[in-house]
Image (cartoon, rainbow, N blue to C red; front, side, top):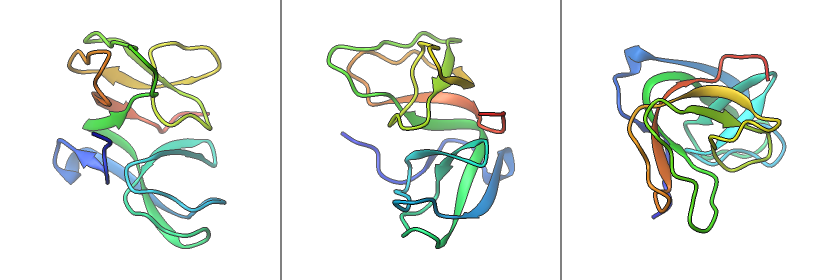
Length: 123
């Protein structure tokens, strides 16, 4: 099942969000974006230019995994990487930027991974 909306697993006092104008194409709640060098998860679905909150750090949040057949599986403690244009995180660095750590192992068929997320890095 695809995730819809932001999926926090901690109190909002354990998160950091910023408000920005939505990028070209707008935002979809729960999807990840790179804006002004920050990696964030949109709180709402909005059209381009409309103010939207992006969660850029959370101690516990469900992040979408990159969709692929049969994988990847994530192990607890794995570094998570995000590349602008991807629909989720992966454990393969490539040209991606580290944006957190896997808190609970996620199987190949899981759509999400529980993460300690920090998108407040230079992307």
